[in-house]
Amino acid sequence: MSDAKTDPKKLFIRTYGCQMNVYDSERMAEALGADGYVETDTPENADMILLNTCHIREKAAEKVYSELGRMKALKVDNPDLKIGVAGCVAQAEGEEIMRRQPAVDLVVGPQTYHRLPEMMEQVDQGKKALDTDFPEESKFEHLPTRHGVRAGAQKARRNPAAFLTVQEGCDKFCAFCVVPYTRGAEVSRPVERILREANDLVDRGVREITLLGQNVNAYHGAGPDGDYSLARLIWALNDVDGLERIRFTTSHPNDMDDALIAAHGECEKLMPYLHLPVQSGSDKILKRMNRSHTAESYLRLIERIRAARPDILISGDFIVGFPEEDDQDFEDTMSLIREVKYGQAFSFKYSTRPGTPAAERALVDDAVADERLQRLQALITEQQRAVQDSMLGRDVNVLFEKSGRFEGQMVGKSEYLHAVHVNADVKPGDLRRVRITESVRNSLKGDVLD
Ligand code: 5AD
Ligand code: SF4
Image (cartoon, rainbow, N blue to C red; front, top):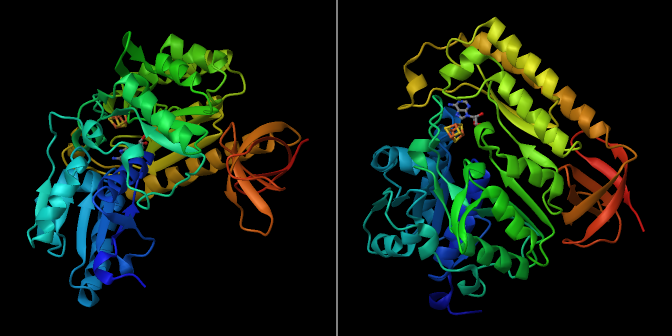
């Protein structure tokens, strides 16, 4: 047994919300890892609990407070336990969190978590620490590089699919959305930093990278030879040896430029999957949402993307019950969905977010919004199902990630992001051709060829 005093301190992180939070949680673990913390899977034996939170809808934000109530109880058995709140609730509510839940020791926003080690020093001295600045310096330039992370603080090999943030924040100001306030203005990371990080990931076994940004296709980073658009960045990543697949999310219709559309047809490593939220199919509602595109322009855009890459799987986001949405507006959304034929979509009932322009407007009756959401989700489920079933008998490429639930089963993702199960002797990181034999509830089954 090792001496308790030299045991590394244990960090438990719980992540809510989007993929960028998943990425941020990893980087926070690395920042604290360089400070001697190792990650644990259970909050009960942790020295530090960090909730990385989401503020996008009311429910997501409220979850944090109920979770904090549960975590506070752990302080009874473990008085040295520290509790921190990170992410978008931290940014939006700041000090209010400590007022509502005095057990919280630390509050850190999404742009300042590179300062976590200093903040922890303060907390270790029994003080509270709060930092929700939008600093001049970029956290990315101040975080330990992935190579620099102390052994043991990080698993040596990684999941073969990883996220990499290339752009953050949003200048679009959709009337319903908190992101421009919690994540701040659009900022793109420099190309060389991204390439270095991608190479580091590949060295650790990563074969697929999803480029992340709240408005990822608005990416415009400084490169060694001028400014890079997202398309140009993707082409640069296409040359990284050992990297097999590139994806990106989330995009805005207005930033789908010609080069990016063409890349979907020409860039070998760019996967045929595009998440392109439209939110509504009614021009009246789109205008009130401040989306600055129409249903028609979105449909024409989808046509152009499909002309470049006919088999591309289109995914989207929808909000129902936005203020003043009437029956006709909703029917317009349903027609748009019927026309696009989504392979995947996420839909939400409008949730009022304090401080956003739409928060001032009259709400749609709750029962009406519920009914619309149900109808929309039924249509989406039907479409998803049809797209998934259309894979039957086809051969797809699968990047295997982990064991399945059953003995001998392995699961990976096809190029279209469908989960595919096989019973075969394959390892995580293997990329194999698979013939699809069955389409079950939320995944496909198949046989490895060769
Ligand atoms: N209410 C409901 N859904 C929202 N989204 C963003 N803000 C809200 C809100 N206030 C949805 C949008 C966005 C996705 C990430 O979350 O559809 O694309
Ligand atoms: Fe929010 Fe609109 Fe920006 Fe997306 S584009 S993050 S929905 S403001």
